[in-house]
Image (tube, rainbow, N blue to C red):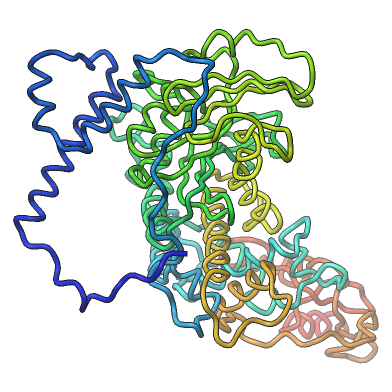
Length: 563
């Protein structure tokens, strides 16, 4: 890990002329690279352009030289060592917390208190828009924190139905969750949960239409925090994941090879060693106008653009790989390693048509720093790399590109594996909530990486793991909140025994086993609840076996019928 940044007192800052000069220089470099990437035919060595290039910076000349060397050079069987700059970027946690910071403090680096305040505001707004509900009372940030913590706890202890957590059956019930808030309150908050005002959502024919409008504000808030909070190491992997969802959605995807076959596809870039998610992009279907270099090219370029010009190494599979992508990324100081479809445009014919018979057979061809490799292991596989050394590794008998790919490609898979252990949230029909819970889970996993990479005093107990950290985040998020008016006590051991609460002669008021029933007395007098529904009770007369309300109905019924 790189050394810490020096304090502000050691740096006086840049003057205005230096800043303007740097901005203008960067603008010129970006414009030159853009012209090369967007239109390869623009690369022409004319007299006029020669005069312009003479005035360009050394960095521009280096980019142009690399591109021209790769474009104009043919693939060759003669192999030489690749020549790339060293990775020298600062890595690790940025703006470190104090050693005595709690797990919730790391979580707040991604989803701070203002997120829960906005969640409460929008939930109250949506409840008001849906019309008067006599069972609804406005919520606040503390209650929303408790609501999210319950959803985290539910991911650790998963039960078939929400009602199971509040069940009177001890085999299902969870007294801890039930002590935070009643089931009716949890269901009401879940009913009106919202992230933003959707009353003015743009229609599909509107130029401002955004398929992710309902969660766009949350995505825009979390994305910069992923990059600012932690600087990853040299090796990054890009891959696709799936947010499971089986409801109706026009950009829902089906991927039969994935463990989660139906859902919302999400592209991710993660640190290879830790699985820290540095960025993500949710796929919403084909975009009008087409793509110049294909979907895989655009995904890798957009996810990695914040890490260009840093000499990082990117790993991805054959869905994304292309010779064009590797050449263009090398222009911006980013180097690639990945599998590639053997018939991909730009690969040499000898690699495309190679039919290797024996295990260990290999064909390699080179073009600048690019090396195309076809290797026969259990099956024949093709690689493309711009930084891996050529030839075979002496110890394993496999090409270096194969070893590097297997070692560093699993960053996204590591993230998905950790996320699958304890999914946040409950199944439902609203697609945007799946993205909300995905981001909450992502924040917990990234916070766990920060916690592991940070100095802690006192140190955590031996055996403290991801599960313990997750439970601490949920408990500290709740912060002792409870919306119950009375504390829930433990049931008596003889809970099956019917205890008389009131009695008139041999008529006794007892608890009903199971669900509530309609009160006979209230039904006789046509009494209704505030919402217009029949009055139900959990009590009955043990002798008459009639459901009767505890307050008034039991007494009035028997006084009228016994006299």
